[in-house]
Length: 129
Image (cartoon, rainbow, N blue to C red):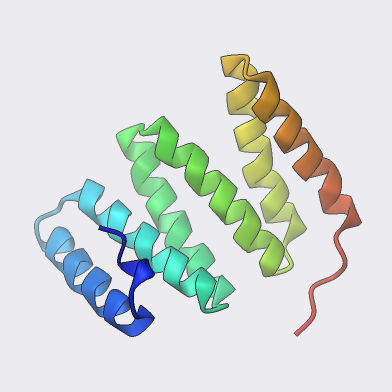
């Protein structure tokens, strides 16, 4: 269930309770999924530093689990969060990881997309506020 479609406070409480349960159970899959949900809530709230931190934790779990689909999704999400927090270097790292993945897979459409995203990073105005 994607709690982020509901009230954000309720969603945060539900994700955190689930995360605590998965931590106690040492279930990294569940932890990673809960961290994803909280990451999206924090991103939606404009708490980019916290969103980036939590998303990075989730990425570590999915790397350990070798879940390529989630890894690609997180690199994309973290790249966008990095842009929002004004860290083009971090955004570049995440988008380059996805570009390398799609080069390896021979996926020309996604290669084009990430090449364009990377090219656009130099055109980004500096972050304010």
